[in-house]
Length: 225
Image (cartoon, rainbow, N blue to C red; front, side, top):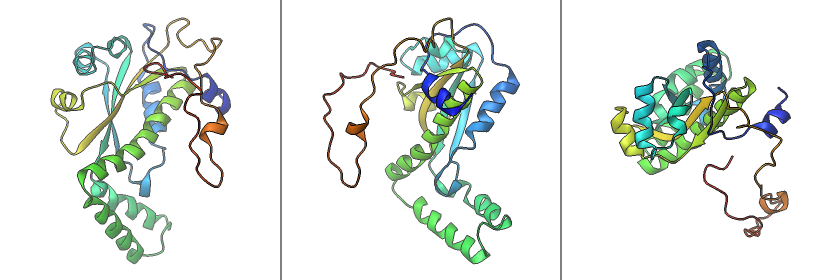
């Protein structure tokens, strides 16, 4: 699928068919997601993939009983590790081996920079990991739709209850949930008019920032696509 078509036809889908996603397709979706960019290429993302009924039911309990969590073929918990040093050594070793950087001295300087990031307050590190991990989540959704698999990003869940239910260590930030599945008939019908988008002149600022008129559109519905 051409990217412009992919971009314009993707929808957030709540209704899924009974067709299962085969393992190879699912694996290729996650492989594509790992190609997302991240600060220093530190790739803080990890994915908890739930396909069995009991796992999805447990997730639905901490996601305010949203039905599409269990109705989708696959539910994904998108996690970001909050320690920037977690993968830093292997990342910069790779840079050195591939001559992206010229010397071990530069590698060590980069490690010092990231070590400084690791000393930031937890709240700042949570913001850091959310930025990069959200890029991976969006890449995941585009990769899925390129293979005909619909998705829905979800921010409606209790992160503390989720961490407890699935025994997720405290150094991980639950960034969002994503449901995946083949859409039910009509659920991703692109013939329907897309929900409103704010106009370009309101959201793009050239040279200086002047707040746009926020009254152009009504408040968007929950789980807007």
